Amino acid sequence: MRISELSRRSGVSIPTIKYYLRDGLLPAGRPTAANQAEYDEDHVRRLRLIRSLIGVRGLSVSATKDVLAAVDEQQGDMHLLLGLVLGALPVERSGRPPRRDGAAEPAGAGAGAGGAAGDVAALTAEMGWKTSPNPPAAQVVAETLETMRALGVDYDWRSLVPYAELADRAARLDLDQLPDAGDPLQQAERAVLLTVLLEPALLALRRLAQEHHSALRFGNG
Image 1 (cartoon, rainbow, N blue to C red):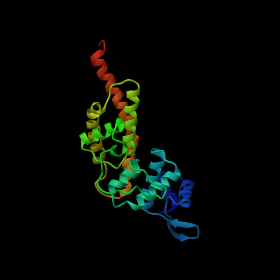
Image 2 (cartoon, rainbow, N blue to C red):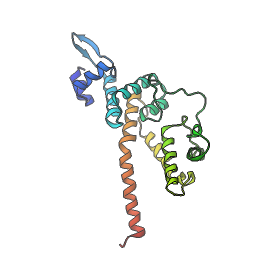
Image 3 (cartoon, rainbow, N blue to C red):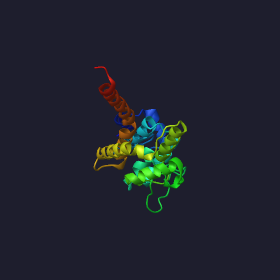
Image 4 (cartoon, rainbow, N blue to C red):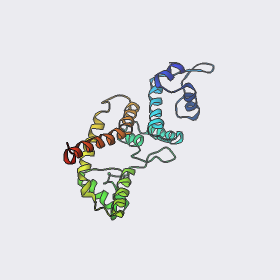
């Protein structure tokens, strides 16, 4: 297809496509004449993933370029690929994901044995979850627990177990909705959309449910 068709199929404007080509985010098309090239389905899928990373996840062009470089190296490993595009794994400036030496460990296990980090390690061990060392999500949980304690709220990892069980079910549902087969970039794009775009809706559903159950327990009819 020509660049005009590529733009229509991907939803990305022609000037933006040319910018991605110049900056190396998008591989060059097959030259057909002076200043003309043809593009294929691989370009469509890659543009859709770029659009998801920049427009949905909110990454900068530079960060997206690093993620794509890592994705290109990991297309045979769907687990690593999903970790890269969803931000569960950091990406080095070289475009490579961190090395995975040995078995995975409970989240937070490498962040110190005590305090909130120890709580996160205990929670993930209770759930039987294995993750990369010190994932960003584990740090968020630890910081939240620390803040609650600083405010005098008696809350530890045991209080989070029912929520972790709900999260486990939600994660299984997320992965169940990925295509069973096909291009890894298509699976990565859908994973970004399902995870990032759905998160505000999931929070809103929680608020609606809270209103409903509050009315049942405390309402005046």
